[in-house]
Length: 157
Image (cartoon, rainbow, N blue to C red; front, side, top):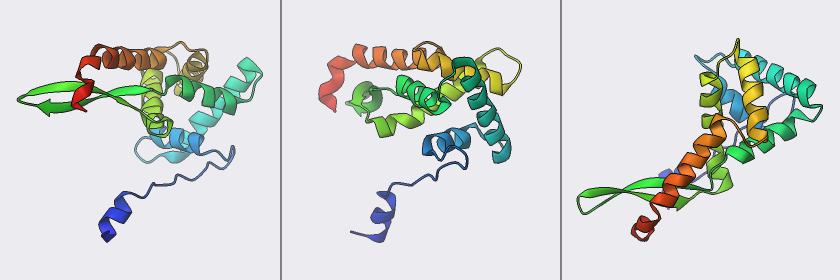
């Protein structure tokens, strides 16, 4: 095994955030961050978590986990070129692999939401996702429908 392949196959560990000591929160902060302004991203997320606690009277970390679990896809489609035409082939997604698109979709949904600021939009989107509604959950359902529609091409895998 070459040096390069040992580096490529090694999973990159994300460190946990300072307040909740959770890696998921840090992943969310890293994706929320724009132009390297991590402090601002932390402030947005922590205020959103505080708002979730006020609204639901529950641990915001459990709401966050539930939301991300609700948005995480079970299957996805991959493009594969077979004999001159491209097929969308359904592929199963492990929960660890599905976390990245789940975070991405929930942040896209937050940014598209109407509202005054990112704190309100992200807290509302996370609470909606925990309740199994909202744009991010709809995106997951679209992906599942596409995978279901292309089930016939699964043998190309």
